[in-house]
Image 1 (tube, rainbow, N blue to C red):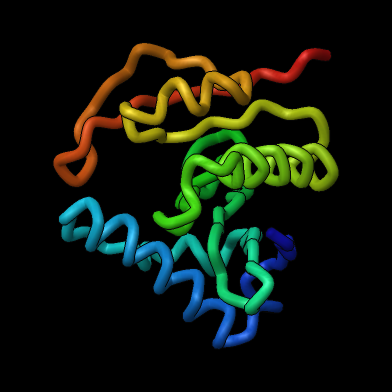
Image 2: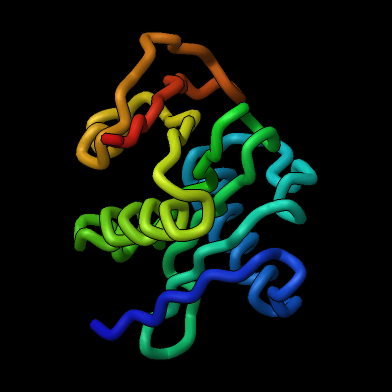
Length: 152
């Protein structure tokens, strides 16, 4: 499958691109997880957005990269999602690798803090994120705070 990866700051996204990002996030985080929450939290305008399109141009994966101070003192990656029909094909791992590479290029070899859904802890561990043991409920879904610390 041919995938096209693109990263843009919010102000360079077209309305169609932002629509497709939000549509995929709502499909996964609201509909699939049966969770009512406010996805549009005001942070998208301050983020870099990674989009992955399939051969037909459909957004099939996305994530956002937040500047230090937007969510945590460190850079953060969030709203990581892959189209349900494509999960299990390593697209999620490629998505995280692209995020990590971009953080390194844009911010340098820095720490990255995330709020991960607890059931994805092992997935993030594969990308060298470590749990700080702080488990909590966010929108009635168990989450865990995790930190990537670069090798200096």
